Image (cartoon, rainbow, N blue to C red; front, side, top):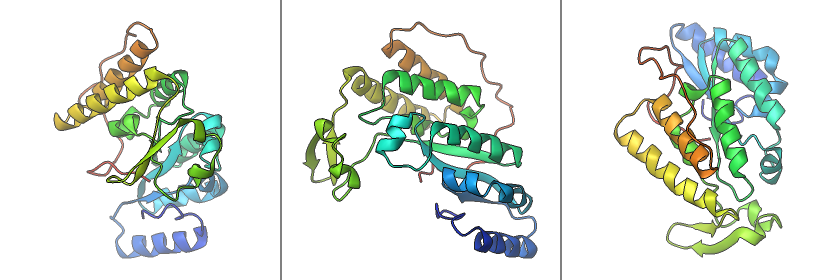
Length: 234
């Protein structure tokens, strides 16, 4: 169920899930839901898991409340933390998606996101390409009306239908290039997501002038959360 408003009408959504489970009891599925809906309908999550929901995709976007306010997401960092806890407790995996490169995301914000992913045991729940996602501003975007974006906004790239923008910190521009290259190469090699994660964290620490941090190599045979065969964005 890829509609991010799946839980906007929870009564109807659960009725569909119940009917699906009654007809095909061994079938599993995933849903896409807003962070705010996961919190609002937290009492529905255990039943959703019992009906066969294996994981939930949600557009968390950022841990910075400043960035979340500029993107008008309708949730906060605390809400994201609560959603991770609620979905996990209900017996499902939360697969948050991110936009870690925006004009307002600081290098410290980026490194904090990676620390959050590690501390909340989300490394295997996030497709590495997520660490390279850059804010896309197409013609007609409401962000074009935002005074907060104006100082960083560039020209329209006509053949690709988006407006360019430049980060005020040149380290973030360089990091975006390095991370994009790293995750693309890792995908071509079918590299373990954890290995890619620690490569990205090393790049972020290096950009900040911090030396390499020790980490325990991931166990190749570890249990991993369910996922789609292709990275998904919401």
